[in-house]
Image (cartoon, rainbow, N blue to C red; front, side):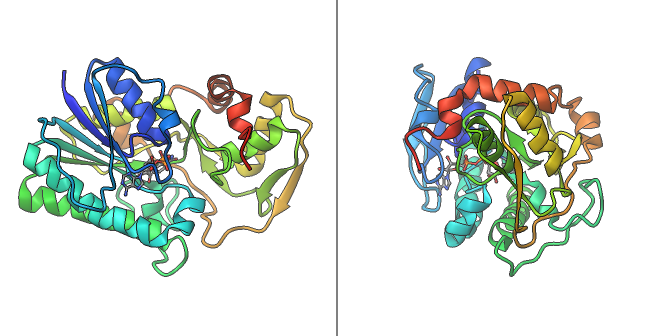
Length: 316
Ligand code: NAD
């Protein structure tokens, strides 16, 4: 049994990671300031192997108990959040990552950072392999997120090279599942909320832009596989099956048996036109690949989350 510290553990991915680590018999310390996460995501966990520490990792923080693994997920992740919290997003990527790497160093723990496909920015190479260095607009509104993650990757490598910390960089591509917030602005929770209420489904632009959607259980399996391997990465983890946003909207309508129609809205600034991971490295190094296709993942999301949570009952 290992002790794993999860920053951002009350968020969407973090809470699923806590569940899976506990299921595998580990002790979990969940650290979160609840900025975009929620106690609701971890309310079901009632075992002595789980501790919750409410703190802001932008400030220095310490944990007495020995730690074997640090999973660093804390960061606003959806555009609605990081556009609302631009300075916080930069600080959590910089100060927050410094403090968390410092903690990993002190404990001689293995450190994994949840980076993002957004470090590739405009995907001039498609699909995106880890060797593509990206094409990011540093001064656009999304720059706060993309550059924070790029800085966090550079910092991770500096702690590895100069301080000897055992690190891994994971580049996560769009992931979905239960516990995404219905109003977080990302395509799948938005489409599910609209479809389950038979309201118009709002597709940005003409809907020909593509995304590759990974079901959360596949992603978490890949994350733990990378953490428990000796690999440093960066390693892409995502589902390489690519869909247009229009296809996604149609699939959501089909699996929810909805009467919604599709309407079009303006494209956000710097929205990538295509997005697809090259996962050859994850296959070769970790023996990992996704197992759950889009239809099955959407069905599981609806079943696990329930309609009330997906439509944000009692909220705006
Ligand atoms: P999320 O917003 O649900 O979770 C982020 C968590 O971090 C929240 O619980 C939030 O309260 C916490 N947090 C934020 N700032 C903090 C701070 N200063 N101190 C302590 N806790 C703080 O987002 P998510 O989708 O679960 O994303 C988790 C991580 O995975 C993020 O780092 C994100 O960049 C990365 N990622 C996610 C996706 C995806 O598709 N979900 C894709 C690429 C990368």
